Every structure is written in structure tokens, then in C-alpha cells.
Length: 532
Image 1 (cartoon, rainbow, N blue to C red):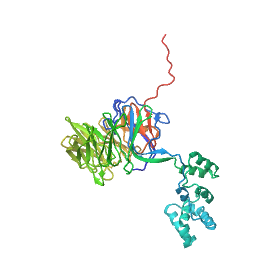
Image 2 (cartoon, one colour):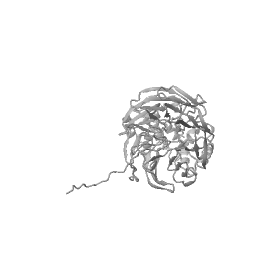
Image 3 (cartoon, helix red, strand yellow):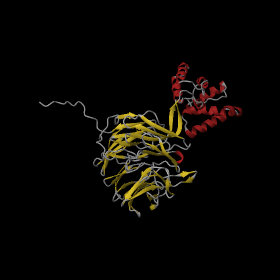
């Protein structure tokens, strides 16, 4: 899940519906965890050629490998968690892997052998080869043209130079680069001065500049708070990192506090205004977004110390553990709340099951052995829709719920998904998968349409003003059809989903957070004439 692509397309699907109400986006998938934005203002039905206007972009606070936690918005502030960020370097250093990849070696090639290698790497025979054929050719060339002693001393550098082919650097160029390899320049100005006076070809200079690091990665559990009006940093808090893979938690703000699950199961409760610690706790490893319900912070977990770790509920005020439920353990699926006859429940998705628990006690009300997936379940009244993946290719299933059981209504097979959660609107399910988007009638399970040209692997949709936002392509969709209205490219971190508030879309990019205005542009050139 860590193949990260810098550019993503935001999709906006226009759905036949009345306008909903605007609100903050204080947790994963919004105020009701179903992707719906209440009371949205009117949104534009088309965008300028360059996409929706960007209101602001924060300073560089993130990095591509710093996890995929999504942003949230609460009380005029944006919150995001990262497990890595980048800081500027004052020094400039060329790493030795650059010239080694080009065929450099401390063992200097004899002039006659170098000339022979360079004729071979520039040959028409060499330029036609790739992959396994090239590897076999290189092996044979070395065996044919180098004696045993030469193979020991020069085999590696010969192979590297032949593999690089015509683009391999001239030896004189590599000698110059060797003089500065792994030797830091104290400032960027000194490095630029050396480069300008080096006499290196311009294409080599460009490649060297690309190879020299200007930032360094710093790992930590980092919670960032920005001003939602202008993107300025309000506060940033850092805590020790557990040295695991990139972490992906989305924060949750409730009751003036910001709750975040960090690396190695660390749980942080911070004052949302100041970032000061209220309490810290620890549960099993988890990549989900915690849910705050009925005075509890509930977190599904995966493992701790190499062993399965149960879903855990902590007191939201103190961090004291109130209950654990070993029937639910997983890393990625955030739980959702469900209420029936005045009783509150939480739905958790495990590796192979979906479990309904009494919120206050963690006792199991019912359990489905349906195979868990990464998307978050959604509800229409007492109907729950789950996108599951017990094996390939996965599917979509609806259940009729009661406090005692969940009865299967229908299943759409052959619908693989990775993480994009569905939307329910006016009796229809809009589900976004790896290979297509579908519209399904919720009462009957009838698939009304399937669009293979529209898909989403991770980004979950948002419903606002009758439009479904997946980022930056706009579609007109209803139970009869789905058509593309507009497209735009934005920098969006893979596996994240935007936040929405007051007609604005907040997106976590690969280095920063950005905010886009989706409301209509004001009319231009209006002349007001005073009445006579």
C-alpha cells in the first residue's frame, strides 16, 4: 500500500438530491462518518480550465512517505497526522551511488579495456536489448572479453557500464564527480559555485542537482494544526516514533479535544486549541481513525508485540481503558456508530468478520462472518452496506439490521476494492472500486449502471450540495446515468481522502495541505444603475 503517486484526480459526481447542510469535517468521513456534508452552500457545476480556485497552500510540512492520514476540519482549524516530515538541509552532498550506477569503480579500468567496453555499450547490438536478454548479453560479453583476473577486479564496473549503455558517463566526467562524492559542501552557494565552474556537460549538471538532497526525513508522531482560513501553522506537536512503516491514522476532534492514534499503538489526546497533552495511552498497532462515541474513544487494533490485539475503548476524558473486544482486530477500517431504540452500538470490521458491539460495554450484539474489507460501512436507517474482500474479487453486500441480528439482503459480486468507501443517497448506493463505479438500488440490489471509466482505489467520496466529491473530476450522476462534466489535476497523497467544510475542499498533498473553493465564482462586470 506504499506505492505513492504525487498526482491524483479529484472526482466530483453530481447526484440528484436536495442541498445538505454545511458543517465541519471533524473526523474520518465527516460528522456522521458516511461522507455526507450537512448544509453545504451551492457548489459550482463547472470549474475553470485549471480546476477549482486554490485558496491557500500550507508551508511544506509533510513528505511523500509520511503516511496517508486524511485531513479533518473543526472549529476553523485543519488537523492532520504524519509519521514523517522533511526539514531543509544547509549542506549539499552528492551520494556515491550516483557515479557507481554510472559505472564508477575505485579499480581504474585499463585504457584498452575501457575503450573496448565503451565500443560495446554504444553498439547497435547493445541498444536493441532490454531485460533478461540484456542481462544474458552482458554476462556473455564479460566471459568472452575479460580474463579471470579482470573479471574479479573489473566485472562489476564493466557490467554497470554496459547496462547503462550510451547514457553512461564519460570517465573524465566521473573523475570530476568522484572528487566531490560524499564530501559535503557547507552551503548551497558553495555547491552551486563548484558546479558552475566544473566544466561538466549541462545534462550532467542537471542530473547531479537532482541527486543532491536538499531536505532530510525526520520520523515522529507529528500532529499538525493549521488555520482553516489561510493555511497558516497554528501548532505542531511531535512525539517519539516507533520505527515501523509509515502510519496512516486520521485524527478525530470531539469536545474540544483532538484524538490521534500514532505509531506502535500510541494514543494522544490533545487540547484542540493549544495542542497541549491532556492524556496519552497505548493500544495495539492501528492505522484507523478513532471514533468518539458516548464518552468513549474506540479504536480497532491489529497487533502488539507480534500478537493480535483487541478493539479497545478508552474513557475520552481520562484515557482509562473501559473494555476490550478480541473478536475485532484489524489495522485499516475505522469503526462507525449505529443507534437503535435509544441504544448505542459501534460497528467494527475485522479481518474476516463484521461485529456489532454495545458501545458502553463492548458486548457483542451480533457478528457476521462475511469477510472484512478496507472500506468503512455506511447506513440508510437500518440498512448497512459493506464492501468486503474475503478473497478475490470482492463485492458489495447490504444487510437489514436489528439489535439481535443482521440479515443479508443482497450481494453484488465481482467488485474489487481497496479502500474507497461508498455513499448512500435517496435509496441508492454509489460504490467506487478498483475497476469501476456502480449504482445499486438499495432495497432490491439491482445494479442500475456500471462505469468502467470511473474508479477509485483509495479516495472515499464526499456528498455535498447533491455532488459527490472524489477529488477533481466532476460527474453528473443519478440512478439512470453518469456523465463527466469537468476534470482537474491536484497534488494529493495516495490513500488519503479530502475534508470538506463550507464549500471548500481540503486536500493533503505530498508536501503540504491545500484548500480549494468549490463555490461558484461571483459574476463579473455587473453595473449597478441607480433608480431615477
